[in-house]
Length: 220
Ligand code: T5A
Image (cartoon, rainbow, N blue to C red):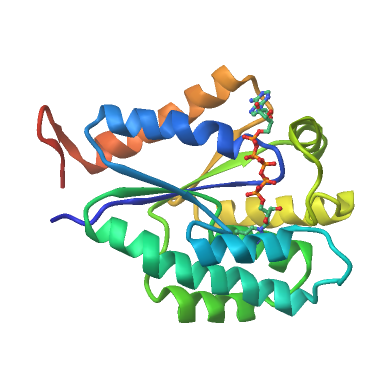
């Protein structure tokens, strides 16, 4: 069994990650690829509980190091119970946020040490890294406006503009450093235009990396 591919969606608040997950899932399934769709923080019972701990606003402030460790605790559980088994089965994994979010939010936003994040990444993930990351990028005001319409703000969404500016800068600097893996999508455009850009990336990746065999699915 060939190992599946690991695709992540990243970006600031309300840029359209969740909206585009099912679009990508449909496209991959049209190419006879079995897809596991999941999200971070979350993806397992325990990791979803951790999600509530870090996102919900209640009386006690969350120390920055606590936040960082909870993100990686949820991730360790998610990798062991969902991501690795799916990839080993040959499924492609489509994940709403992953470790680039930790670099952006805890590293860029909170200002925690990038070296510490890299150390935890190595400890928790070993060699596991996304094969492709779609970074949906839009001016912060646009994303926040969209997020505001969708639901009440969580603990991160209640942060200041300067926090999200640092998050966005960190995402974009990682994309500049890793252009082969991280593809920037202009997410301020209409949904139709955003999905055309996503299709462009997926088509290139699929056709470049795999010889598609009708009726058989993808072969390496
Ligand atoms: N976090 C996460 C960390 O700090 N560290 C980590 O390591 C990880 C993994 C998770 C939070 O946790 C933090 C980051 C986050 O703050 P989340 O729910 O995963 O939270 O992330 P959010 O960004 O809060 O999710 P949102 O649902 O707000 O944003 P999405 O998924 O990007 O946006 P979506 O798809 O829900 O769209 C929002 C609205 O915009 C519309 C949609 O219809 C929807 O109403 N929309 C568009 N409208 C017009 N044009 C377009 N192109 C549109 N695209 C979407």
